[in-house]
Length: 205
Length: 205
DNA sequence: GTCTATACCCAGATAGAC
DNA sequence: GTCTATCTGGGTATAGAC
Image (tube, rainbow over the protein chains, first blue to last red):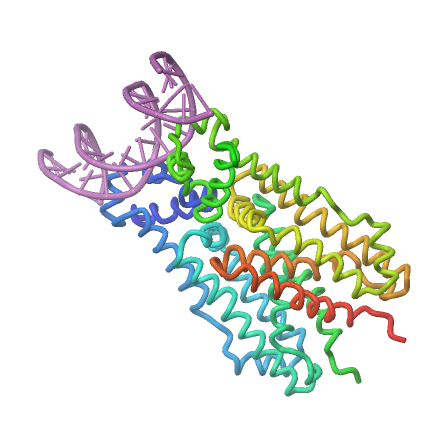
């Protein structure tokens, strides 16, 4: 049996992802849960607090199990393909839960007028991730897989921004679009893109 | 002397770009223009109609002068660099008007819950533009500039999605950020990105 | 074309009984 | 922890005088 606080959370995620934060009222949430709107305030002190809780949940889920750089290095020793697919699988596993997909859309939608969310996108989804890719390309230079004179930062952005656009395209521009189809195409598409870039900087034998 | 209908338009563009469509009321617009809210309805039949007018203006401005494919071909004959920089300059010229920058942000912000805007983004900003790049890469194959076995569609997306992300990053994720700085960096950044891709598929001599 | 006045609705939130 | 009842404020939009 799921308690009302959790039901409010679930329903809010669902409605916010469909209509945006401003497009959903406390009354609608209450009605969907099957309680009166005043009861919501026993669980969350304001509407904004629900959104905060949703973001906190997302941040926790996305950051709880990371692949440490040391492990990334080992994976890379096996092969670049192995490394890449391992990372992609982990990301897809996290994202593929229905709730996480919905929250991803909420975050993309609301990042334009919610300071906290915009900051999360800017630092975690963009900044921190790009740094990770820079480290990786630096590592690949050391291992002699790519040329030493190429720009790791540019390479990281050239690769990763493409993937971020695919995300935005799915969650905003083409919405609503089949989630499973998107997740299935994400891998092959980004592999093709990576191959183009990799081909440009790899050390030929 | 600028009439009130135009002032309503200008003020709406400004406020919508700052706070989003839902975040701005007819009262605010009227107050900023210096008239009563009821007067607005003499010029626009609803709030939605103002947004429609803004989108129509943007579409008109962005599509009124296109580089025809024939001209693109000639530019390409000069050199790839020349072609690329000509196109980029035209795009930057259109975008660099203050009003167009603001509307670009409105369009990116509102595309999640306005069918008409989402459709414009999907077909014109993404779909149509990608097709243009596909044509270009096909042309480059014919001219023997790039290898015939590479995938024009993937190349188009690999290139263009990067640029679209830069747009979203500036107008949403890093907002507010200096517009001029963005416009100045857009060229060099996308050239670097293009070089990486081009290097991967070019016909070596 | 602008004004005053107002209709009508729905939002977020709170007080207090049970 | 849920309810009924209510407060307060703001939203879009219209009617009709000037």
